[in-house]
Image (tube, rainbow, N blue to C red; front, side, top):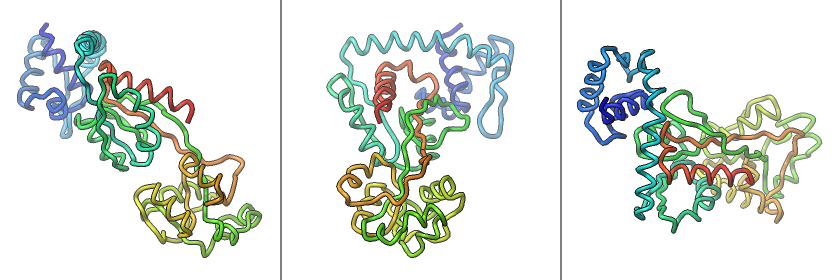
Amino acid sequence: MDLALLRTFVAVHRAGSFTRAAALLGLSQPAVTSQIRTLERQLGRPLFHRRARGVTPTAVGDELAHKAAPHLDALLRIAESEREAAGALRTLHLAGPPEFLCLRVLPALAPLVGQGQTLRTVLAPGTEENLAGLAAGQHDLVVTTGRPRGGPFTTSVLCDEEQVLVAAPYWAALADPAALSASGPAALDGIPVVEVHESLPLVTRYWAAVFDSVPDSAATVVAPDLRAVLGCVRAGAGLAVLPRYLCQEALARGEVVSLLEPAVPPLRTWFLVVRAGSLALAHLARAHDRLLRAAAHW
């Protein structure tokens, strides 16, 4: 059986789409379609059900993928080791929210530079947009707080981050911690809200987890980068919900104050996502492993 046909088949099986597989393989969509039809003729069985949006494997297709994919990945690892031995530079393309990439991910990966690794980043907060780019081959690795549901992905839990309700000392002096614990967010009435989006994603999650309620006011300041949110809070613009790692130094210096320390603090989970099968690439597997090990100390 032709290995090129099997490689194309596994790419389609993982991508769930002839079009996405074509982009990943550097082929035209008609070429991918033709190769799959050739393989189906050779086997005498259909491998995919054609749908309005993409394809789904038949039972025969699933069985063939289960048998063939590990061997193709092993061949890819051999080819990659030869490339590395020859000193070829490899570029890793990352995507994720700007503050998390800048403060967590890139510092963790920096030691790989100089080991035949170059890095390129897309600083974008949108989970769906980043995952679509990953599926299309625009990115190699995505960090996100949204776990993919389906799709051609392999997902690992990276870490949990604690969420903290903070404000500058001036506003904190107006919020009675006892009243906040007893009566909930009503004790915060009159304090402006700083957020990353009009929909108040962080405040809404915190209110639901801690107060079992929803916020009843709009944001006063919207800045689509948590570092900007922290800067506004530090300058006295209002309250915000921020990850502890981001505001820990400001808390220690007294520039911002934690308004509440709930017994069970709200957590947000980060996920590390790659395309299925891509960890056979040595440079990607190395970065993936390094991030998982670094995240154990975050």
